[in-house]
Length: 272
Image (cartoon, rainbow, N blue to C red; front, side, top):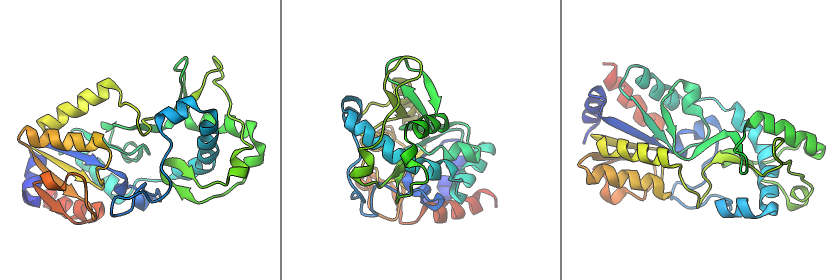
């Protein structure tokens, strides 16, 4: 499988892209893992921990309060813009992303599927009322004036590194409609992908002539499962990542490149 063949699959609308955190590094959003696929920082909070532990929710929202502004201001990279342009030219009808930063949508890719959810929305676990993350930021600010102007090292997905003595001072507001627990609309580690999204992404993977994995180590099983489905149904698997991935052993071809390098070469073929 060559770049020329991938470009031809795209012209035939038979290519599917799966993007990971590597494509958003240029936007200032760090990745969870090192180039070798190991955790870069502490292990993230799990779905069960968030739902069952008020102290874990306190930790999450304290750190998110500081980290969210930078994430919300992040702008699409050249890779995001190229993918959106290919979408507008109908080379890529749909795309699957493991990222929760909504940068594909900001770039103009309106049929990007957020397999792990979206960080810009918060939902009540009791009444399911939605709230934009910016509105929730105001709720957190009103309840925690001591956090005003606080700065910390940025971590993945709107997280930030805060000391425990600050975290323990944080008050987490309840749902303004029913008093329930508010949770970001993302799939935490150990959580379940919504059924309709799971079914749609698996159908796309089965139908793809080639699945191009862009900037992901595929350590999370949901992405790896899509790779296996494409291969099992006779499609090619192209992996683009500077470091090793979980699916290297089943890949048709590997490009040891950054997403920006790969998309630049591919764009030249598509526009020639």
